[in-house]
Image (cartoon, rainbow, N blue to C red):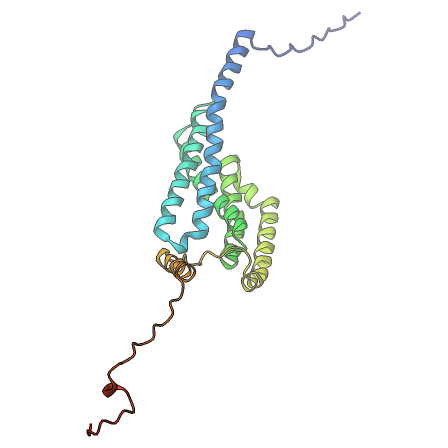
Amino acid sequence: MPSLATTTPPPAPSQPPRSQRRSNSRREGASLPWRYLGYVGYYVGAGLISGAVVHHPMAPARYSMIAASGVLVFLLATVLNDIILASERQPLSRILRVLGTSTMLSFGLGMLSGGMQHFADLPERCAVLIPLGIVLSFVAFFLKEAKRPWRRIFGLMGFAILVVTALTFLGLRHIAPTMAESGGGHSHSDVVPEKGSDEGKEGERGSGTTNPTSRPTAPPKNTDPSKQPGHDDGHQH
């Protein structure tokens, strides 16, 4: 009679020893403040870029410096989170890819958030920035994170993003003229009044209230009868 083969269950995965778990937990706790700084850098960098891309035509030199500062802060946060604090050592090609796509992502997020924030102020410009920010941030994110990014970008999700972007652009372009006519939001083209003119007006108002109006003094009477009008002394003048 054949003997029944006994099947042994597969061995359970061995858990790391308690000392290793403690060291991993300690390492995660030590890196948590640095990860916080990294996420702060993400949001601060994107915020600087969002203001710069919207207001750039008003002062190109100033807002170019602000945008460059935002990109630098965003890239430092990327290096900290994705390279220094990464669990595995990253090759040079991966590092360069992360830096390039992070720059694209920072501008895409800046265009999207800045355009949404200032649409009431600059509707024509923001109607272009918002759709462009959607496309740029989508492409940059999948180039940075996905293992096969082109399948995602040119797949079903990419087609959906393209449709949403087109509808957003057409809708905002339709709304922009009405927003410009209504003059919603605060205007970025207001001229700040000069300090001297305000002080002059205040001085005029102050002089009108503090200095009473003086009465005109009557001319002194001429006591010489020869100088009075209508007096005929017999001489021909």
